[in-house]
Length: 436
Ligand SMILES: NC(=O)c1ccc[n+]([C@@H]2O[C@H](COP(=O)([O-])OP(=O)(O)OC[C@H]3O[C@@H](n4cnc5c(N)ncnc54)[C@H](O)[C@@H]3O)[C@@H](O)[C@H]2O)c1
Image (cartoon, rainbow, N blue to C red):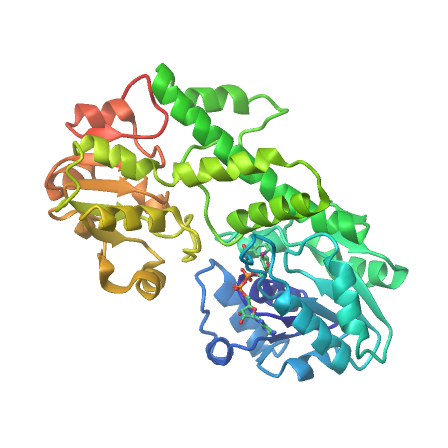
């Protein structure tokens, strides 16, 4: 099939590369000419395991091309994906300017009957706005489809190639059959394509992210309670996660959720509820809990250092909002660094992938270490923010001798509490009230 993907960020690039991988002819278009130039050289602007191979192979074989000419990309395509950003507006609602701008361009430049697929996460009711924007200039029939994306950064290629499910909101038989054909290679193992109306598809994406954010905030608050009552959240987690009505995923306590999706999607859903007069107060609580949780690591460190933060030198392991990505949007590390600098501490940080991104965001306000052990040199404490695999089994003796004081604040419960204490560390983790 002839496909174009407008917006070549995390989502658009993965969608384009994976659709080319299954034999389609895909043009990825973006207004960012630097990004497009890099992609033409197979230089991937984001850190995403497996993506470079897909881009290189499909570009070499001529199925995948990159352009800044959005109009040319749209013309001739049977299916156009809209995958541009939907950042939060000042009131928390999703800013639809990019989506609607692309929709107008599609109306203007389409040259045949076209299926227009919204991949961007957009609030319920957006399809109607897209329809109006396209219709302003359209001279050919078009069909709308809402196809929310559930990929996880860090596992995006795998998630797209082997999705748990594909959600497709459609209103015409043509859109239904084109999209079923396009996705057939990805659901061969029996994972379902779930067809529904467009409003339900739009809401499904927000409901999924809001549910996951709710689990995270719930477990973070349970962890904080564990500390007060002398319970161990790791045991509570196993105890509830083995109930198959609950399940084991997304029950790990941590320094709060971040990233490009949960914070903005929770805000946008709160806004949609407010606009319609529906009560969604549970999400206000989820957001509040998350804001407080982002300060927990700083508070724990402050307590261990008896409030002596001015002049303290702190090592941080992990800057990305989660492992296997360089994405730092709304990362808990940013809140921690801000509090540390405000309190007069200095910081040296390590991250396997996000140093370049951190430099772009915070420049030389902190120092960056080439290895996790280097970051520890002369530090009064280590704070672990992101659970990268390489931090799971470090040389603990080397850690202890590198640090000026053997203080570890572990935001991800990576190590055994009794073992760390037996080795002489002052070790503070999350929600392990019994033993800390
Ligand atoms: N990142 C994720 O994990 C994820 C997962 C699921 C859904 N989503 C949703 O997908 C959408 C895209 O997210 P992302 O993370 O890929 O964003 P991103 O910021 O990484 O990429 C968006 C891209 O769109 C381009 N763009 C903006 N306006 C354009 C225009 N008029 N024409 C062409 N290109 C344009 C930008 O230059 C940028 O490269 C958002 O709605 C997001 O909520 C993201």
